[in-house]
Length: 349
Image (cartoon, rainbow, N blue to C red):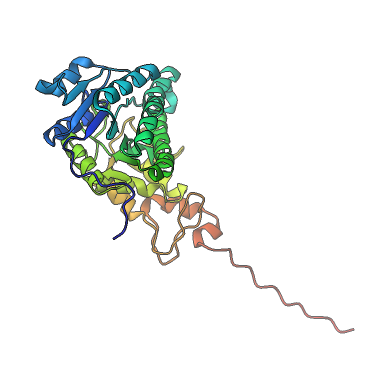
């Protein structure tokens, strides 16, 4: 049997679970689900009233602690950690769901708002890790589940600060796993696509493959039961976004511009593409377009790869204009053939 990257967590009865960001969305759905499975819950977020509503009748009992806090305050995070450990004697699983989102593009970049996103999404997690990791290290057991986003896979329009923060979480989770797994601590990366939450209600465009918070909670717990490092969903959408990381930039940029309506300067629709354009092209979603753009078997792929697929493979429609304008060595997928040397004749003296 192939070993899993993390210990499988299937039985939640009696497990001491801290959910940071539990007042709404995915965090609240996880709280409801885990309570039904017999877990002991500590629920944290800034809004205490909403936390109490999520906790319901078990609020204030040994089975549920409600600890309001702001993740941007490292002292508050440490105090909450100490409270949980002193009450239960330790921690088994921490779900770090806390995050914020605000669409932001290059033309309306707001430094104050961008710093707020980074402080909540990235610095908040760092504050949590500084308090939580020593506890789990002393125990030589436990798990940390970090909720990122598929927006961290690749740069996207109108996602300057949010996408950057989620990309940082992916890198951070990878580093954590390498360091903590040998110490008996599991690290799980959760990468959702579009989930119906108060944050995604801000999006002015249709969201392909959007799922409910209950579906998201089910996917997360199923991934932890399988011992996965990364759980991404919905697969039809997340796999296509993940594919963009492996395509040459000329392909991935072309696909994203086409899907989002962000055309290159001088290209079709450059002056008329609406802000927040739908994430579909006709009846085709990014998933179909990503699948259609997949290189042929054996074709070189990678960030710095500029070669197109072999001549037998048809390039994707979105990349065709770029291929047509490429130098001969790019378009052919190999070196430009040299001209035959002219054979001269010696003149007899």
